[in-house]
Length: 438
View: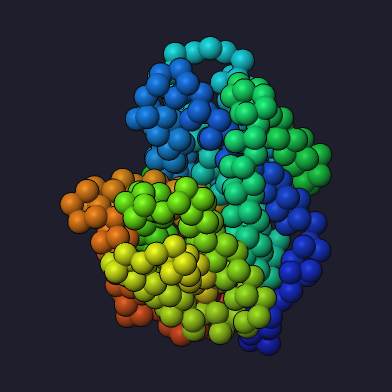
């Protein structure tokens, strides 16, 4: 693969057709979309199953979120495996593992604690095969095609999640929760078979005995902790991780209050669904517009304004608007989520050569964990100042994050220079101006 931003092509705009023409990306794209549908189906159905067995709203909520927080620990303890093992085996094994877990939940009547433990254990491995998949995408697409590939994944992920939630409700009503879980297992199995048959056998990025780089020698846990330390100590990588973590955390926290806000305002029952759908619709439209119409440098210049757009409309909830205005504010906030596209090339260029898989796993697991924590924290705030005030506070936090990004984010990514083979792997700053070797 060629460098991600050669001077002659640094501002060339790719097309979605060009991205989907790459066979490996196309395979990973469609299998991931099906897997996200299965995830949403499994999470929803498992939550229903737990509530039906216990009658506890708390345990049902725990069942819904139990797969999120352990991912961060999995990334820290096992993340180096995303670079140390062959990607086909990792991705296939990941889908097979989630298939087995869904079948176990569907067929075996375990105690609730044991069921929650199964989901938590599987989620520990999730960052490993997600990191391997993301690293493979970065190696398969070059230049602006990589950014559009991320855009397509965002769009498909949001759509698949919505479809999976709807499918979960229909499947539970028609089949019951255990058979609905079996449906999710079949979807995972299909993904595992497709990757095993269609993805070529590729070597790992680094071997377990390599002494250099983020993943060094030693056991998987030691190498993973060492690699995570390298990534987080590098100022550029750390800033770019936080820039991709914080705005979604605050916005997701605000999203978690929408139902309560609608209830406090005595909106009609149908309004709940309208409000809940506005944010993801805005995300879909924003990703398509920014990804398709803007050139790479324009996307990077608009990173800070788009972060501000994700937060400022939410401040309007301090006035406790009605359904129509609330819907517009949420949709505008969703449009701002496209800011992430302006950070994709700088983030990829900032990564050490032999730690991309672990970095992508850390990015995803950290985001999932914080988005699980955000609603809990803002829910506590809402108990004191009301839901409208808490949503507005979340919007203000996003706006402050935009100001922080403005203090260090350049308007466009710098021109790449060759990697310095004598540079220290611990200095992630050196990689900010140099594309990783492919």
